[in-house]
Length: 153
Image (cartoon, rainbow, N blue to C red):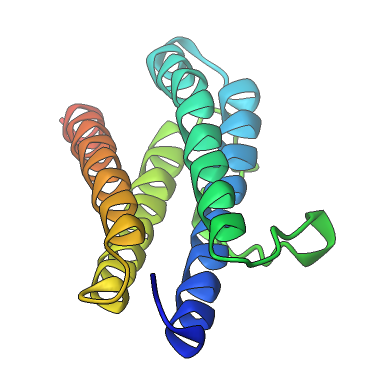
């Protein structure tokens, strides 16, 4: 396990990932309900199906934070900043939601790559968790990039 300095850095990186997963869950929920139109149905279903996956990511991150003797933050500490994933004013703007998901996934991928680097040679359990979550985020990115291709035809 990591020494105290490395553990603190890892906990902070895990807390940020935890926040990102919870914020994504909230935005997926909102968009899975708020979107309108026939073209929106497939995206709404995909977002609704991903909500439990994102929530599970947050749960796994919270468990690891606790295992590293960190404190799992509550809602008042949430640091939200997913501007592009906010439900659009035009509820039929499916492309805006798809692009928001792509942006959020790319941000998550970049952050999990950072966690992997921070944990390298220091904490293989955290590194393994980040690698697993990275793979799932990459798969989700590919799915929504495919949706974007289809909608831009």
